[in-house]
Amino acid sequence: MNSIRQISGAVSGAISQTQPPNAKKTGKGDFMEIMKDLTKEVDDKLKTADQKVQEFALGQSQDLHEVVVASEKADISLRFLLQVRNKLLEAYQEMMRVQM
Image (tube, helix red, strand yellow):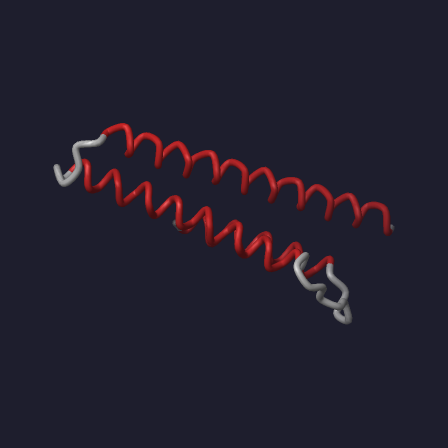
């Protein structure tokens, strides 16, 4: 769970550094809000997967298929978020190289 907070902090830091202080927020497409929502969604999927694994381990659930599906959803979501973060950092680094 700490890795999600670290990723969220890195994404937030990279975005806040690239956004001018007088930038206007637009209606639906506010990028920062989209990234916050994505991070929260991934965190929720990870928590759900952890809960299902714990329930299965304690014998409260007998549905192994449900546990595996929840774990795979969480894994795919986390890998997607990491790729988005990596692309954002690459774009930021490229912008810094161009400005010099």
